Image (cartoon, rainbow, N blue to C red; front, side, top):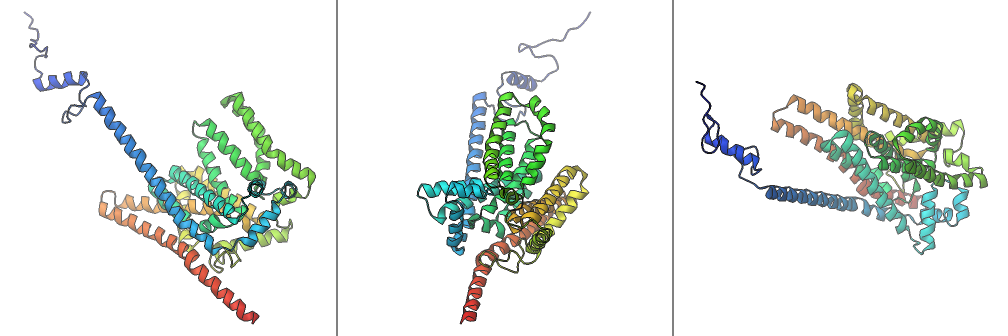
Length: 440
């Protein structure tokens, strides 16, 4: 006779303990999690706990953003008292005093139009452009951090952004009344667009592409990339027709036409603007191009920009600690074949920046600064990853390596801040005293 398994009054199969049966019943009722050690939680209580954690993380992010903004204000705003910008402001007002003057020199047309509108509405003060430069610098720092976060990871991104934001060049750009600081945003925008091309965010792709096109169109020297884009545009039209709907394509074409139209009108009214938008104020001769490249390389590696009212002459724009991290970054990008795409992108960007500097000269130095600091960020990541690979399970050694890298970054940033806020003002006083003695 066959013997069937006997079930108890709780419908528990024979051989199963009472404890396991109770756990299975509670799982079906969705009262507790898989781990039986946890206390019974209802679904409502679990959702309430998740909501509380989300609010906590949201509050922490807002607190970090506010703290970073306050730190940037403390870093950038005091720079205004060291820069005598009255004469420079009057020159910019003269270039933007009327629509005819704006069209007569098409470079930096959006910034000149902004200055013209502010002057027309009664905001006639250098403070307007200083606020514009300050807010623009914050946008550049945030965009740079966004790029570093996607390419380097959180720890290296924080250190690299801190190194970039505290550089003397960024402090100078945050308060100088110079439209050429628009070059700072071009490379981060290009890298951001390169990242978005791999994501399914079609609206953001169009927005960043239009913004990048506008920056390139009205910045001297970068318009060569626009000409290359126009040549390659038919190759991308077929893919765009497949990926985007007709409304977004028409929006992109209309925005592009609106941006090109003022430049086209300027070329028709003033044909000399074409050479100016290609090479800026520099002369279009081989000797002028050679001199632009020589002076720019000396500014990067040796003497800085030759204007004592803006810079500590005799010190390079990028300090040698950052150049050392830059070399480590190049080695890391070259050795790791998984980063070949990024290595090629940065090398092409570096060549493009050097060509633009050759045409334009010192104003285009802001193109190369983000490339150098981003590559230095790969140097930071390279050193950290190699140290962690040697000590994978030793927290003391890992923290020691991280502390050494942080010390190098803080030392480089401290040097840049001290150079701008301590050494440069004192050197300016010495220069003015020596000049007065010479006149006497």
